[in-house]
Image (cartoon, rainbow, N blue to C red; front, side, top):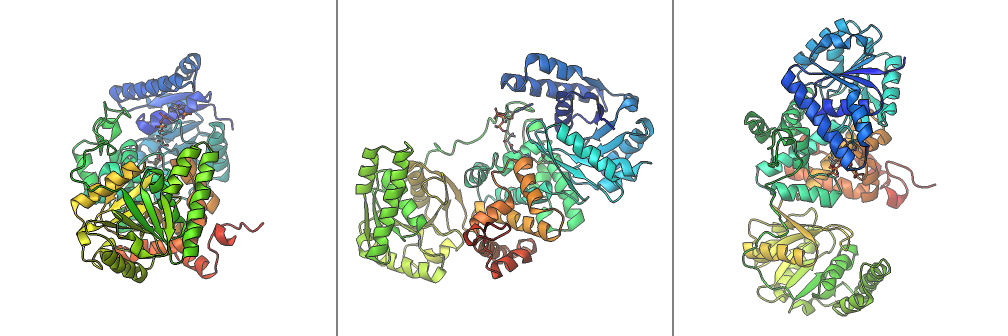
Length: 588
Ligand code: CAA
């Protein structure tokens, strides 16, 4: 069957986007809304979106006119009597969807396929409201539908294979990459996305970090196109609430129980970008322009301490990377390693890294030479006695770090700030090993430190405001973007990232989808730079397992328990790319 005419029911954010994509690809569209006002609003959204596409050079003015000319806007269901496919995209209410499907079933021609764009409701429940359940399928697009190329095709136990094949072919004809999966709440992408989004909301709600810092952390730390709170605003907080609620009711996973503030915002009518306000305030309803974001790069800091000289303890990649960053910014650095040899190796690594930067045109030869003169390697902690700041970047072992902090406390001058780059240990444990807990702070750089812009500034219950301010000012001075958070396992990025990676492993374990399909879903459906299995293999499964275990032990969330498959791979020595085998085989 050739699909040439398609009905789209519901012209909200998703429906309007879907209608646009379909009409753009040459199909006739019957676009249906329940009221004239809603219909007009939908038409406006399509007009605005296509106008933006013209402005961006993605569409000619003539093609835009042809696209809009292919759409019949109506409130009359009988207009669906000659379509080949109907895609429903109304709000996430099972009762509403069932009623619509029953009605459409009585109007659409017998050959027509009926599809739902539901994100979380059971397609099977919807299918049985019709007399043609074998012709009912899920076709789930991602927001913004004209931009994101992934589509989930949901096959219920009664959907015929022929219908699934038609849906797949249709999605491909729209330039989308479809993946066929079973009927489970959240399918692939939402099931992996919404636990993360909900956790981010809880962080914000508990004032663990600001909305800007949470969003910036995930953009800069993970390369996501949007932070979680701004993404929720785009998805719509009402939709997000409904998706989480459905997922919670199906799986009873506490991590999917919608964070209370979501409900409050929805009740107050603050439904995100479409209503002009959600976590952020927008220029106008539907506008992507935020008007109340705080520019965290320039916000005024109170008292700070001067940092002219610094020490870095350690000789690994983090230590040398941090020393490089500080020296390039004009700070004198003493790098202390366990032996003179190791110190020399670290200094050589810094030189090689700077040489590369020169070769790439990111640094001049003069800048490199001046920066290198500022770095001195040594094996003696005593040489840190004049440093204004010492950054510890030794092995992630609490006893080793604690012993080092005792030494630093003895060696460093009064007023020196003692910082740790730990990514998983409690900073307060190190602070209380010293006689100056107010001067101890976390400075969590990301690897490679010379490249990654993000630094998490971790404030313990004892850290003074002046020390936090100084840490933020330092990050700004050395060209990094600081975000501030409390002293909880995983800080912002790891706490939000690793449970999602662990959930992906659980999904694989449950044989719901393949690693390739899951990676594709997150890259093409959410714009992530890497899929979860690609990332796990790069980070290392031992490292990932250890971070996940730390999170589990701190939060005691059953959902954070490391997935058995992850544990087994680590036990087998399959640690990812570094051993040639992880979730994928890299040996050949
Ligand atoms: N037609 C064609 N192209 C269009 C377009 C249209 N109507 N509108 C925008 N584009 C193009 C733009 O021209 C631009 O392309 P170039 O970069 O080549 O110029 C590109 O799309 C991005 O558009 P913008 O520049 O306007 O926006 P941006 O760069 O700020 O990106 C974003 C915005 C696409 C939303 C990006 O931030 C993103 O991908 N965010 C993640 C979104 C996400 O995760 N979505 C999934 C949510 S979950 C879901 O949807 C499922 C559910 O059930 C809830």
